[in-house]
Length: 402
Ligand SMILES: *[C@@H]1O[C@H](CO)[C@@H](O)[C@H](O)[C@H]1NC(C)=O
Image (cartoon, rainbow, N blue to C red; front, top):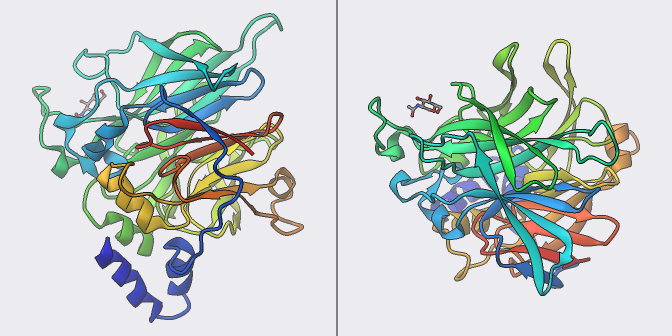
């Protein structure tokens, strides 16, 4: 990473355009000011959860998890591509946040039904999770959930044997499952495999079948691809549904990451970037399937996943020191070195007006990595002032009183 830091520092000499990259993306010179940190319960049974989704009404948190120590071998998002050492026990878990989180947190592993996995082994390699809720017809029934997962399958040869993925990259797909809120099983609906689903990071469902998604890179492998694609954006946002198939709806983007559908504004989506210090608001046109840029939001640092709180505020897990984050992630070791993390709040009113009255961005949380080392996902439980934090190499998910 040192050489990359030098490269960025050298770019500072190139003048104005490079300054935001060095200062705001890389975070060189940025001070860490601990904010609302340190008051967390660590849920040890939820390890290696890159992403989670909250059902605010019930307090059920759906997390996509995998053994944290496996990420140093197989983590296509970080170009760690030793497929033979990938984890084989990835699963969706439900944390009931109404249970006794301190002494007896209720965690349920969600079984899959009708999912063949790789060569019939039933496994998947999880990363992002997002959900489309189909309301129940009567109020005494639970809603149906369509769960959208990106699955980093390893690439196989034509005989179905595992090959060296360090050259090919992963064969990532998007998997749709259906379940009932709270159920301990989910039924496979469809695998989306398409050349345009290239390096999927996260899905944002548009309805029960159609979805937007980010490809976080153009290159599937390569040591310096993060730096190259930050300096020269080439990644994109795609859309798929059964009627039109898949198409790219926005490009180029600088490492687009965990996008989300706004909860209080129909057809509006927020796309964060881990290669830019802003996020972009888009309007999706359901008739033409076009994704139209509304405005860039100056959040001040690169971000990973963004989520909606129940009041319509957006919370973004963000990287104040992106080189530290990349180094800890690549090493896959949460114990010997920490990367600081920040959670940015974008108020609902700003999102609704698209910043007409300015942006009132708040640094809601910041810490040195002690609560969760490398935070990639965060959301606020507004009613109870609990901040949920998780990350792909963290041996626990944290629930923090804020
Ligand atoms: C990629 O995954 C899809 C879906 O399982 C499969 O049909 C395809 O053969 C795979 N391709 C490779 C090269 O592994």
